[in-house]
Amino acid sequence: MKNNQGDYDESLLLYMNLRSKQIVRLFAGIGPFRCLFLIGIAAILFYAFTKVTSVWILPVCYLLILWLYHNSRKDKEFLSLQVQGIKGLFTAEYLFLALPFIISGIIAANYISLPVIILIAVVMPWIHPVRFHSIVLPIPLLYSGDLLYRRMFRKQVSLYAVLLFLAFMGVLHDNVNLCKVCLILWGAIQGTAYMVTPQKHELSVYNSFGMYQLILVKSGLRNIFITMFPLIVLMLVLIHDTETIRFCLVLFSSTLLYQLNMGMARFSFETQTVMGIYWLLFPLPLFLVSIITPVVLILYLALNIGLTLSVKKKYKHIWN
Image: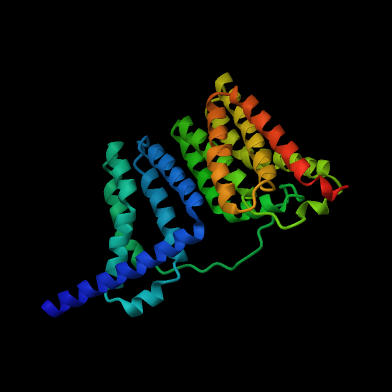
């Protein structure tokens, strides 16, 4: 009996060691700034879940997130060879991941959903993965001249689908704040399309600096409208008063200025680290504050004009 307990403890320590190394490697690959951004998104979603009173929204969201995680895991066969009782350890891990949903359910006095969440965590390790064939996702409606935005959308399409689902849940349960949170999150995510260090002489492919500006504006107007339109429609179905329409117009303007700023800023900084610091200090806070206080849009516009003039002066030798 003691030997079995000792083997289990040894397996648990080995599992925790392997998982900790995987988590450190994952965070190192994501980078500190994207980690902070993801933590912010998680905090906003947690706050939204504490306001949910429906008994099935929390279990469905947890089931969707956990299944996507469990189905995409590539370490199950390796861990099963290295660790004994791997399914029990998976159950313990999934129960730990369920804590934010359980805590938010307790805060919202949504006690009926808690046993369902626990049951999902217990059953999930025994569910076999479903393999999908990789296909190129066609995006016919997005602006074809902006490859960075199209690449971002392909990477974030699953998150976009989750936000659409949450907005739909907000409509079903008369929760307009959940719809607004989904719109703001998607607006913030769009600017990350331009957090890529440009190649040398990347601007030289354009006939002039004005041509790059025109493409950036066209991309912003079309892509923001196309991707935000379903979320806005869902919110306007729920409530379409003057205040909601004003919120949508301000959000669209803020997102456009935010995206234009990021599209210019990538040519002002040499490394992605400095770009990330700039993003956290100026574009993202101004985007969020301008939604609440529209007069900040004037400051955002002034920042964009100054940044544009700076980039134009820095690269004017290309077209001389």
